[in-house]
Structure formats: C-alpha cells, structure tokens
Image (cartoon, rainbow, N blue to C red):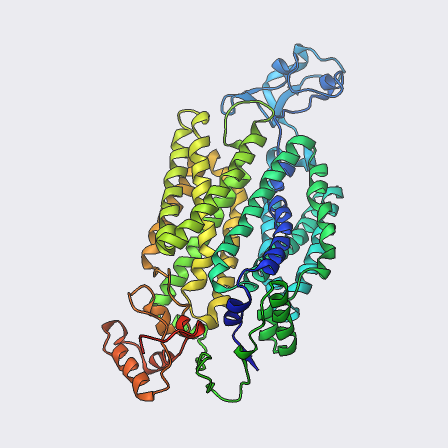
Length: 580
C-alpha cells in the first residue's frame, strides 16, 4: 500500500480543526521549555554583595550591605565603582570589638562566603553550571532524536514530559552543587526532548503549505514562557520557588496520552499501513471531510496506471559521502554550521545576560530588562515568518544577522558613554538574532537532499550547542574590555550574515532529492521534473543538464543521481501539466 500523505491532507484538511487542536496542545508544554531553558538567569543571579565581617556583622541580623563599619573594613574598588566584592581589610587583633583601629587599611584578605560558594574566585563555576545544562541539551537532542524515530513521537513526548516535571522539581530541592548540576543536566536532556518532539510532531501533522507557519507559531509560546519566567521571578523573589512554579505544572500534561495522536508520517516510515489509514481517517472525520480512498493504491509496480494519481519514480539515496565529494555543498554545510553556532551564541549570550543590559540600581530593573528582552522575540519571529514567505530565506537570514551585528556592536560602543544607552540597541540585536533563529531551521532543511537532510540538521543542531555552551562565559570578556562581549557578538554576526552569499534561495522551490537538485537550487530553473513515462524525453532532460557548464565537471555517478521524479502540484490537484 502507498499513501501520499500530503495529497491526502490537501483533501481532508491541511490544517483543519483537528490539527489546530492537536497543535495547540503540543505548544502548551513549550511555554515551560522556554521558562526552564533560561531559569538560570535568576537561579544564578548575584545580588550586590560584599565580604562578611564576622566581628561587625554579627551585631546586625540579618546583615545589610551598607553599614557604618564598611568604611574601615571593606576596601573600595575603583574598577567596580563600589565596595570590593571579594576582599576585606586584615584584622589586627582577636577580640570581638568593631573599631577602626582593629583593622589594617594597608593589607587585604580574601573572603569565601556566597551561595554554593560561587562568588569571587569560584565565580567561574556559575558559568560552568549553565554550560553543563547546555551540554545536556546537546546530548538530549541527539539521544531523544533517535528514540523518537525508534518508538514514535507520542511515547517519546510522554516520557519526556514526566521526566521534565520530576527533574524540575528535584532541581528546586537539591542543596549541593554537584547534585544540582547532575539534575540540571538530566532536566536539559528531557526538556530538549519535549521541545524537539513536540515541534516535529506538530509539523508532521500538517500539510507542506503550513509548515513554515507551524514552525514559527511554536516559538511564540517559547517566548511567552520566557516572559512568564521574568514575571514569576519578580513576584516570588526566591529562585527555588520560581523553579517549582515553572516545573510542577508540567505534570498536568501526563493526560496527553489520551489526546495526542501518533505522527502519520512516522507510522508510514515504520510500515504501519493500517494504523496510518486509521489516523488519516480520524483527521478526516474530525475535520468533517470525506476520506479520499482513491488516493490509496497498491504498490505492486514502480508506477501506477491510474492517470488521476501521481506517478512516482524511486530516487537513488544520497549519502554523506556524496555531499563531501561535492565542494559547493561542503562549503554550504560548513557555512551553515558556523551560522548556527553564531546564532545560538549571540541569542543565549543576550538572553542569559539580559538582566544586566540597563542602568540604575532599582530592584525591578533586572526583571524589567529580562522581560523586555523576551518580548522583543515576538516581533523577531514575526519578521522571520514574513521574511521567509515574502522575501525569501537567504536574504532574510543575511539581513537579520547583519542588523543583529550592527545593533550588538552599537550597544558595545554605546556602553563607553553610558550604560543607559545600551538597552535599546541590545534589544534590537535580540530581536534580529531571534529572527535569524526562526529562519535557520527552515532554511537548513531546504538546501540539502532528502536522504541526508535529517543527518545534516542533526549536525547543525549539535554544532549550535557549542555556541550555547560558550554563551555563559561571554560576559567574562568584559574583564578585558567592557564593551568586548557585545563587539564580539556584532563581528561574528556580521561574518555569519555575509556567509549567506554561498547559499541558494529556496523560496517557492521543491525540496531537493539528489545532489544535482541541490546544486540547481537558486539558479532560476525548476527542481521538479514531471515524469512523462518516455525514456527519450527523460534522456533529453539529462542531456540538457550535461550541456550546462555548471555541471560539466560532475562525474557520471552524480549525473545519474539527477534521474529523479517529483510529484507535481498540477497532478496532485488533478490539473493538466502544461510543461510536459
């Protein structure tokens, strides 16, 4: 039995009532994924602090930052513009008095006090904890991608949701740093599984004309989760309670086992024809449509004899070896890796340090800055949606990264004058890099052949995690030169934007099936070839390609890979083909 799922969905509803309900349910957990991924912004938030002076602070319960005795017990740091955070003056005697003559203002000593001892010389462990989290994201994306292909999207999602709720609650309860990092690593793995599986399941349940929309709409829920995190942290103050609030509600999604169906495309890939037809029949019934049984045919021969059905020819699979043997595709693949790394580095670099963008000492400032940095993602994803639909993928991605680079560099140089000038250009940088984030998933999936598409997307996602793992340490560059982090973000974004010159435009083109298809992208010729059933006509098409200088150097193997046939839109809609 052979079923063209896209053709069936066009008949029963590409994004009907039933798919909209399922897609909405899949988007709800993404809210908590967005909150969980950036919770460390407030878990690791370091308030204004100084060294504890036992002989003096014991008279104040609880101790406060500004006390009269700090003038002779704590040195003033000209670099910080405040009291030294990690040193105090050496005490001259062992009595319990707190007088100026008890301290030497010429000799300083260190102080180790802090939450999990993560201040001063151990402050690097704060960034390392978030790097451990992103390492969990990397491992989870790889492992659960394989699991979802083996046991199905639905079971993977159910397991990941339960594990996400449990690990999130445990994170709020642990006391030791090692246990904290271990649980956060596990939480990152399953949180990534929730997002990635829900994303794939949602996209696979709709027709091709709705994939860009569904790919972007889920990101709005992610951004809403970030805003929710900022509001909850502002209201609850304590990080443990905030962690509980963004984790415990995930347990409500265990009931999804009764509402979320399996992906029809996964059922087809597994050869579960009866379940596939039953799933499609359910969609048709819920959408109030009649099921097109005439689109289901027996796969007894290479071609169908029914003129009302598309004629499909088997395409020779492309391997990664074929990609490595094609210089242009190798260049595009490496360039895409770099673009993903930079996009992720800049996005998380701005997100993790969003609470430090503005100026002022008010208590609410970090929360307001973080919420603003989250809200600008909404227009960012909207620009990605509009750009991909109207102006194309390559130009939209290049422009968004170049504008992000200019904005980030501008924010860095603006900080030389006043910190109050940083917020606006930094928010613009976050908006444009979010736009790029929304484009790269779709764009990368459209420029490589089908047989290696998932592999290359997996490699892109893996490389991106290295950018995320570096992001927590990006702010340390300010120790060398204050504006350096934003300048580095700007330069890297500009370079990544210019690298799009090697990419093809994929707007309104068919997905490539072969190496030749991928090389033809963006060259003003249709990738889709309508099967005529005539070997002479097919050979004519191939001979025409042989005359093209672009392919004169291709070997016989690569030319043979171009002997493929794609289903045309005209046949699927029952319209005559005017190009045959």
